[in-house]
Amino acid sequence: MAFGERAARPRGEAVHTVGGYRHKVSPLAFGRSASAHEEVSPRTEGTFQSDDGAENDAGSVHERAHSPEAVVAHAASENGYEGASAPRVSVVIPAINEARNLPHVLADLPPDVFEVVLVDGRSTDGTAEVARAHYPTVRIVGQSGRGKGDALASGFAAARGDIIVMLDADGSADPAEIPRFVDALQSGADFAKGSRFADGGGSSDITLVRGLGNRLLVGLVNVLYRTDYSDLCYGYNAFWSRCLERINVDCNGFEVETLINIRVAKAKLRVIEVPSFERDRLFGESNLRTFRDGFRVLRTILGERFRRADAIEVEASTARAGIQ
Image 1 (cartoon, helix red, strand yellow):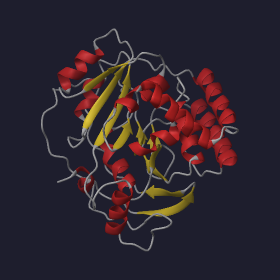
Image 2 (cartoon, one colour; image 1 turned 90 degrees about the vertical axis):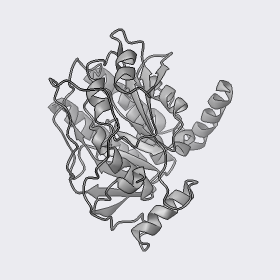
Image 3 (cartoon, one colour; image 1 turned 135 degrees about the vertical axis):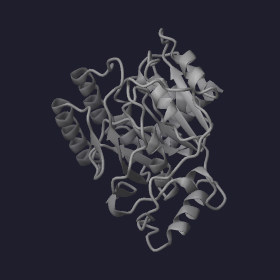
Image 4 (tube, rainbow, N blue to C red; image 1 turned 180 degrees about the horizontal axis):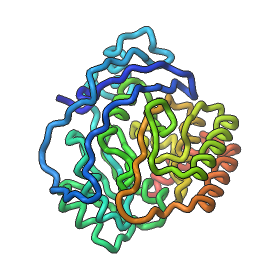
């Protein structure tokens, strides 16, 4: 069966937001992840099992009268695909010195993904070699710049799929949730936004300070950009590759998730929030610095307020022409 057809479509209620609606999805069973102390075998062929068999009774704001099948067909047609055929899914993973975590992350990926693009930020622990050993078809992209934003931009440019999924390499994001994001996009969204604070989401990693900061910052974004986001600084998202020009990632650091969320809103793309559970990092320490990166996020929020959406697209086209 095709990737999108295997993903169960959860039941939820539609809530208006920028350019579309927020889909409050009921909790689903997460795929099993190997513990940090288990040995993970190299990836082999397998069969993906969907989370459940529930149907989705919420279409987009403009398509609510149509059947679920019609919504999927409409979404596929609008994005350039015949009927409800499954799109190709590219998973982009930025990584630096994540050799101990990657075997666990790669082992949990659904076998239906079209490609995995690993952006290696000049690792010194054999990250690329470990990735190849556990996922032989992985595409390794060497990062020329620095920072998470730069790594994601490099991965996006290299991705060849119809859908791009952003996934962290530290094991905090559950790869088994990917079908939820694909399902949201096939249901009519342009951008599937992971949220730890939507009904069914959660986190075992977020601290009190980070949680408070996120709530304050997401509140500011909702006021300035008239959005209805429940989470802001979370990097588990997916979108149609055709949206890249509307987003144009041109930042370097951890503020990249905020930048993307704001530009999605300014471009009036249709958004569905997908409940997601953030797990603890398996090994190593995060490069995130709460106060330093928090101020970078705040600067991004205020700076983007006066930047025109059409100017972003022009800059993206110019940058692409320069690469060519």
